[in-house]
Length: 207
Image (tube, rainbow, N blue to C red; front, top):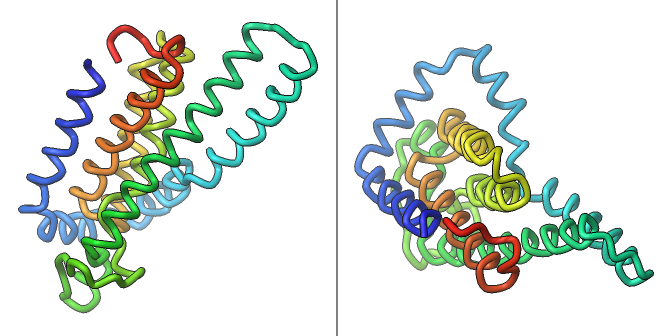
């Protein structure tokens, strides 16, 4: 149940962070140096969904063909299940966050920084108002959960890396803090749900 409570905790922290989002984005904008910004910009896209989705599709396709061809290796079977689990977790999470984006309609930090425009526009249905929650945070926490299922000894590293890559979105003022925490929480809950109910042999006892 640890991932369940961690996911809820992240979502609650994210909702609470809405109170400081506006101030935080100005602090990040004013205090992140150009060199640090360049570093952040080079690393943040490691959390981009397209990269991980493409990798997972390739792995699922290759291992699926191998299994269909009669390869009974446990490693191949595990790789197939893990890649499919990630695809399903990302799909579930994407449906949830894009529903939130579409109906809640939150402005991006750039609107606050450039025009002083801030806030949610519920039922505005404008695609550019898509800040909440963060898709990068969702993606990289799904990755961390699946990576932990495969290599549990590295759990601390996977989640630390996921947290860092997620928080780069706020440091770069691409998202507000609350966007990042809520996206991460949704990622944890979606990946946990898919593993426990769809691939129980991959789910660890503390998930």
